[in-house]
Length: 77
Image 1 (cartoon, rainbow, N blue to C red):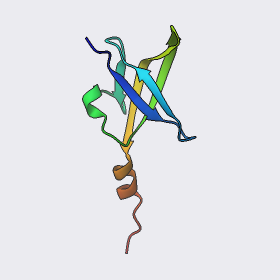
Image 2 (cartoon, rainbow, N blue to C red):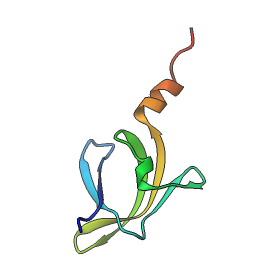
Image 3 (tube, rainbow, N blue to C red):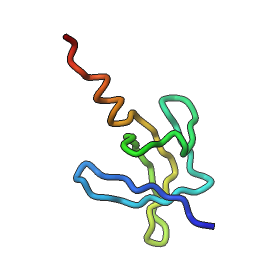
Image 4 (tube, helix red, strand yellow):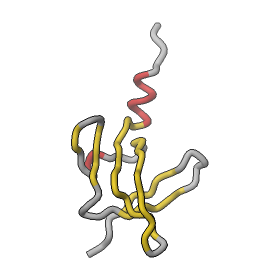
């Protein structure tokens, strides 16, 4: 079985691979969520531990997609 993972881009524009496990929890706001709630461009905050040289996600907090953020802050005419 192939290990699930996320590749995320840091504020410094570096790609970081984070492994996901069955124990990884997902939250969107105060509600439970799942991996399927994450799309390319979605902002996430991930709490990790390091094990055997790998980052493993304990919790993934799911934010807005880049498109949602742009739509929210469009100037009004």
